[in-house]
Length: 528
Image 1 (cartoon, one colour):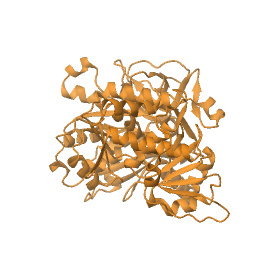
Image 2 (cartoon, helix red, strand yellow):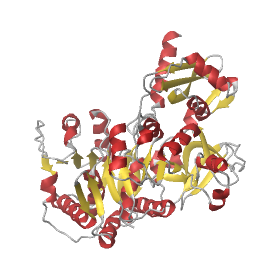
Image 3 (cartoon, helix red, strand yellow):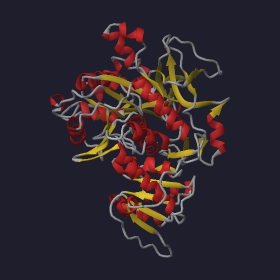
Image 4 (cartoon, helix red, strand yellow):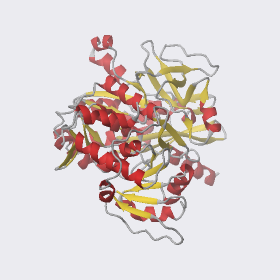
């Protein structure tokens, strides 16, 4: 299925149902389709050809949703950009994908000007608000407003012809471990994931999805297509601020959403959250990073709805697993059910998974032996944009090697123990950072925790941790170390714990462990 077919079907089946709502403003699916069709016609009138790349830099909002469908309608390839990137980082991505056009929210006008100086191939900018005048020496750039684009009266009723295998999106990795690379997703990847999500999560036209995680990232973007497929309603928070997000939850009667663990931790620990009305919520999903069981308990207690842990990658559209219970597991006691809900989960519909030991064999399904997760299926990327070397390195006999380490139990549920690159080897012993992080998160004074290794002349690597405390907590590092020793073997416990006001984050809200690791290694080198 082509992405444009998703919207066309929604317009046909749910023409009067609310597609988009923001405050007092709303569009039904017939109106939303017309706007997306006008934008697609505008792209064609501007001379864009099928498979041309067009980037977008914008906060969550209706314009972002329209861009996802309008670019598909014109058979263009959309490249969503991380809104926290520097102008030079943005320019690098724009040059790498050779974008012809750029959709920019007016709030980013200054960074856009700085970026355009280093992206000479860009021909025009489409502003989500009023057109901004751009004067760059030696350049002629078209600058158009959203209203002008919507007024396009060109060709209508067209059908994109790129098919399922046509390239739909380029998502660039954060680049924390090297140069950013573009993950290619086809229309088939995106559409199959949407239909699988509808089935797995039992989505329907009564659902209201809260776009709270950034729409430039697949932690949220997949819902743009799955919710549209069933005629559900999209609502938005333009930025992640606890009071703003909690207000949208209540006022818009959100039924489900997906947030990264750091966002959920901030919400469930925000003052007054337990007095909020979450009666419309039926499902809270978390994804993007491992989550401690104690945080899962808080989420279930505060939101009073079903919780599902998810795991996936940009390369897999994204979901690979969900912690939804097999029907026979729903007969277990609440405590036993929780044990499965707090796991990484069983395979997502249509996805084949293996957990592979270092010798290439499948690990035993005993919940103990650790191996790397390999994935295969129709939602897996065909590869990296213009990087056949990276594509070849990522696959083994048609299986995508995720780089994530996990155990597998007898029920087919995975439990991630670490990223390969985050595993610490100290004195010959393997230490999984997530196990230590979960121990730290079990302390009532801890808000966030990150564990990583730094070089050690004696042990090879040494365990370090960085912790942010809950507001009002008065805990020192020695108390946290004693807490870890009460739960973990001595060799797993951090040798040092840094207490920070807040842990650094990536643009998607995940903890930027690489920054903490680099800073600790730099400090160690300085003192050696």
